[in-house]
Image (cartoon, rainbow, N blue to C red; front, side, top):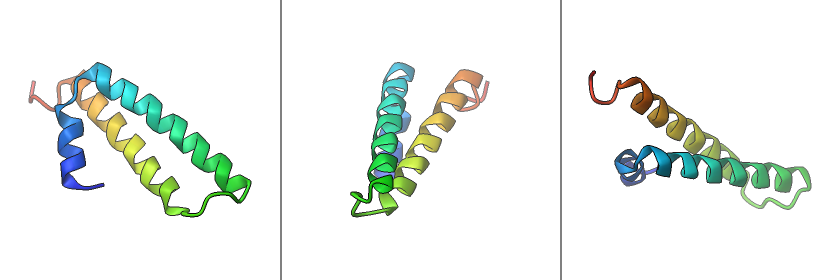
Length: 71
């Protein structure tokens, strides 16, 4: 994930991040299903998507606890 992608995620609202998280979970499920049926051409997509989910969860946690603003 590039720095620009991370920067864009940091600028999004909590609602937008939650929608993004839902979409990332759905695509992760699809990638896992494709891998299980041997239809996934690029296995690194699973790892990239798992990291995206983790980043979004981290940003949501920071927002909810106030860690990002230093409160």
